[in-house]
Length: 61
Image 1: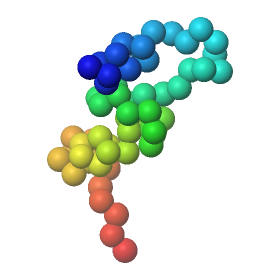
Image 2: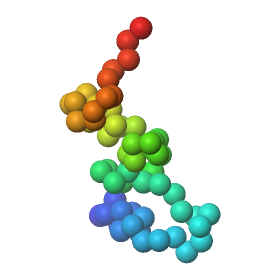
Image 3: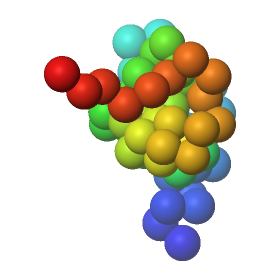
């Protein structure tokens, strides 16, 4: 229930622009957010490993 209320609260526009923060649209996570991909690091990793993000591959060196 708490996560649902967080998602609803986050979907509303912020009253002040400095209070606005990014959230992952998939899981609602606020930390570890990548602007380039518009998602959090965990969802990014899962989608990349499944091959759902074109051009993203696992690094090896």
